[in-house]
Image 1 (cartoon, rainbow, N blue to C red):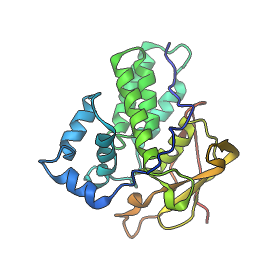
Image 2: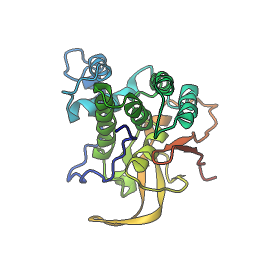
Image 3: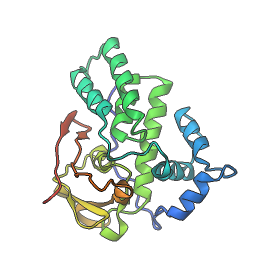
Image 4: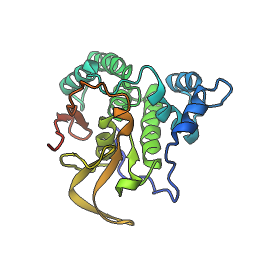
Length: 245
């Protein structure tokens, strides 16, 4: 039965986080002799290669920050279009036409944000019971796992590393964590509070930290910061959240 794919539990927190090391990522992804040479990794990802490992996804995701296509501050009008189309789909009884339209819109949006969990989630849903559904479900889970492996999100010094602001909120939404307005706590980290604290093996958690430093690495001098829309997995509503002044 076709449904939106939602993860209910966080992956076990790693004893040693796989924090992205920029020099290593650059060296591995730019070297044509490396198993993590970026063009090859992206080709495998786009072809739906299910043999990709955690290491492959680590270099794929964080290596994207050094590709010409990575423009995190550009508006993604195709993302907005995909979200609007998703709002018109009857998710209990979708028509073939509405799903084909959604697939086309999501694929357009993925050109600018190829690792968006919300887009991969919608694409898996739209494909239904097919090989493409599993491919995009695996992609989404692998991207979320890659982000989670980069830290534990519990402190500024162990923040999860993201390439897009939306990826942070998608991670929380995918795990059914209801959040409030994010606030910037330093030049490279933002804090996203939870509407209701949760109890875990790590204790009582009130919110999570995300490292967004890659987003502003090549920020134009005249850029005016605007927080983009993001997505709630469960009830299919876009929502706004703003930076604290």
